[in-house]
View 1 (cartoon, rainbow, N blue to C red):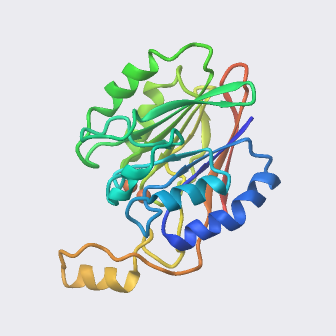
View 2: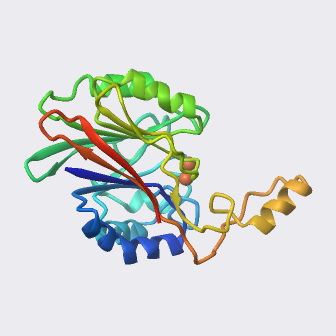
View 3: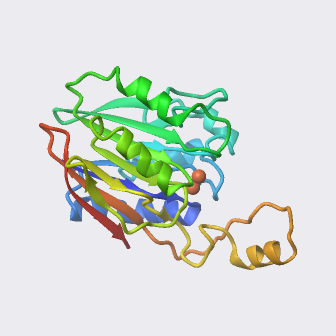
Length: 254
Ligand SMILES: [Fe+2]
Ligand SMILES: [Fe+2]
């Protein structure tokens, strides 16, 4: 089966692009199951119930989050198993941070993990280890969205889980890396899949304001860029359903 992972969806125009293009991409690449990071969908900060529903209706099976999970309190209105918040968030969370989904005759384990320094969190390695060691052996397909700032942390996690997972893709930096590969003969890996967001921006933020912010050393938060021209970054992983091993990885940047 083919699983598509989509990078952080940043803002209204990116949500519109997902609605417009995802059905076509799904058909063109024969995609079976889609995981998308939605932590920035509400104009860079968090997600709303309405946006979540629009992303799901466009064809996404699971929406994962990150350090912006609770930036919009509207997330508390979403009571849906297709939304996953980081498994190791220390504060009150709205779900367990992992779930098992059924697709065709397959069961797919998906989890979202928060990396070091991105808010108050429990140890990422110990938390996922505890959960994944209790997952039934018959759940062969296992997907991790590791939301982390650091390439070495993401790579270390892939090594740590090398016998237990099918896919580890990184999110958060919004910059796609060119290291998509199959590690240890089974784990489909990419350090960061990038974003679906405004091209002429600084990872989704307004560049004019960023220049001011850096020149004047302002303490203000970045401002969202509303440029309509959005990129679509993702990665397609082909999985052997019998073994749970990844057999091909293809990065896409449209
Ligand atoms: Fe993000
Ligand atoms: Fe993030």
